[in-house]
Amino acid sequence: MDHCPYGSLKDLVEWKKMQKNNKKPGLPWKMARHFAGQIVSFIEEAHKNQGIAHTRLNPLLCRFDSKKRLKIADFRFA
Image (cartoon, rainbow, N blue to C red):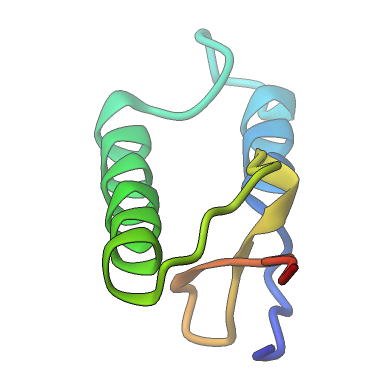
């Protein structure tokens, strides 16, 4: 797996919650939609073309690599 120094999607959500001027908890709609689209694309690609299903996807397993791209971790193979 690639090195992911920027933490997880959960870390980003927690950081956004702690900002002083953030009146709404969580991510801005545009950012959340962007990440959701990436996650759906990754899962679709893995399922359709590789025959792999991720059974425990959660924000902690969605990591950011050194170029701040979203990666999904912990695909367990049977």
